[in-house]
Each structure stands twice: as structure tokens, then as C-alpha cells.
Length: 241
Image 1: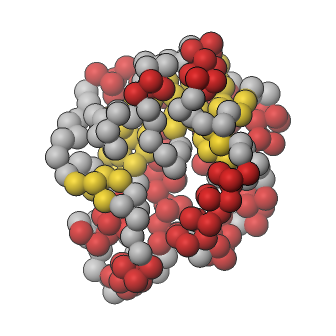
Image 2: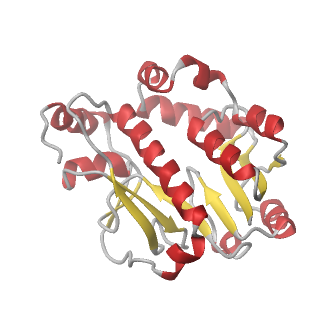
């Protein structure tokens, strides 16, 4: 298989699940990674947004100091996986590189929507959604799912022109414990997503032949800190199934 990956920030990306997945797929597949943001203003905007969303010390505790300092580009170099950077995943340069590589599948982990033109550059774009589909779409889906559904799932779905609207190929539950922080739950979601990608790429034709609908639901946007504090309280109180 030919599998491309679309990520955000080459200089700071250090997510262990991405490095693990790429390492496992590299032996028997042709891989290519595109980082879609290389301007300093994008890094600054991303930093300021994330600083308002997460507890950085909590993230380090959950990922470990070693993984927090290992950059994805370093892992790619060690594996011999080619990669490139563009200023936007929605510009012509990105589309040209995707068409040149001609992937069968594109794994995405982004903080922005893909344009219809970009989605035409490959047969199937995939995303792991950390929230209960089809009910909860959009930003901070983990927190909104915990608040409104009192449960948490991860779904692997097709990326469509709408926001989290593509057909669903796999859905798995995420165990929520009273001891979990919101950042810790994101780590659990990443582990579940990694397992789903493993299963999907072991038999992609099976999963694409039997998709689930993703109609309905509602789109949610950034949750403020007060609401997140309320959600954390629900988790600590054991009120999440």
C-alpha cells in the first residue's frame, strides 16, 4: 500500500502514536509524510491556542519526558521515510505532492479542515475522531462527549468536505476512570486510535466495504475553561460510563 500522512508542525510534532504507527507500517508499505504548517505565525497561533486548552505539566506526566523530546521528523529520518513541509495542507503545493506520491490512503491529524480540492488529491483521507459520532462533531469533541453523552468513543472515519461528517469505518469505546484527567483521556484516545489504524491497515478492504452512516448530530466549538472544569468534575465524580 501507499500511505501518506498529513500532520501540522514539523518542528514540534512529537506524538508517540504517530511515530509508532509509521514505524509499524514502514516495513511493508510505501510511506510519505507532509507537514502542513511552516510559518512562524502558525506556530505562534498554535502555541497560544494549545496553552489555553491543556495543562502542559499534565501532558508531560502522561507522555513521559523521553517521548516529549523525541520529534517525529527525527523518527522519520531514522526510518528512512520521506517527508516534506508546505505552508498549508490546502494549497497547490500540498495537492501536487500528494498527487505525485499517489497514495491509496491518507492519514490525517490536523487542527484545520481540508478543502474539497485537497480531498480530490487522493482516494481516501482518514481521521480518528476523539468523540462520540455521529452525535458530537467539531472542536473539543472529547469534552463535549463527556458532558453531553456521559461516554467517550473514538471513531475512524472518512474525511469529507463537512466537519467530521464522513462515513465511519470503526468505533471503539474509551474506558473513563475517576482518576483520569482530560489530558490523560486524550492520551487514551490516541492509544485507541493507534489500535484502530492497525486493524484498518491489516484489512482495509474489509472496513471500507462495510461503513457506518454518520448523519445527524451537531457541531460543537471550543469549550471554555469553566466548562472544562465542570467536565473534569464529572469525571472525578465517576459520572461517566
